[in-house]
Length: 256
Image (cartoon, rainbow, N blue to C red; front, side):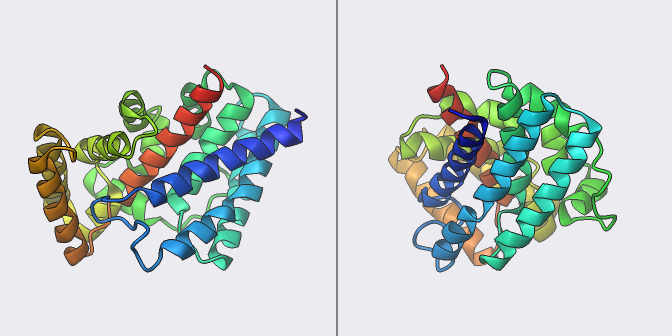
């Protein structure tokens, strides 16, 4: 394949990972196909593809993480975020995570997570000065947030990867594993530290009960799902880490 075809394929693989995460059912507090916004979220996910392909092309052309590449990727991502907003919005965390992973995959297919870590450590000179919701929660509570996860080499993606297969049950278990320990800045924003600890504990309880495939685990998952939807608590950071793990798992299946 030519470079452009490889870049487009990486973008398609990343968007597929996001749409597969969106299609997963019984995700506590997160939209699934029964959610009124599901169609819009799937549609806007497709708007990520041109930007992700451009990110892959820039990374392939540069060949290694550099400050200039980091600035270029940031500019592409901000333009992509605008396009996604026009298509219905959402996916800001997924764009950050998938953008780094796609860029890393274009440069070092066999070493994606360490290369993404190196990219994330570089400053984005063109980034807006205003603090984001995630950075505000990181500063207030000391949580890593999406940027901290990337700079640490995506530890929660690493935790999820050994659990992943194409089985929905395995993917739910991977999500719950992430939820049980991730200091999700979205949850910190909406629920505070006590709410975050509540969600982490309930996710761990489901896993301790044998996961959603056991009667006890399935009942606990249903209770948690109802609880989070009623409270309006959305563990979006955990969903983003699952999306990243699905992308990396796809790459490993294609390049064992």
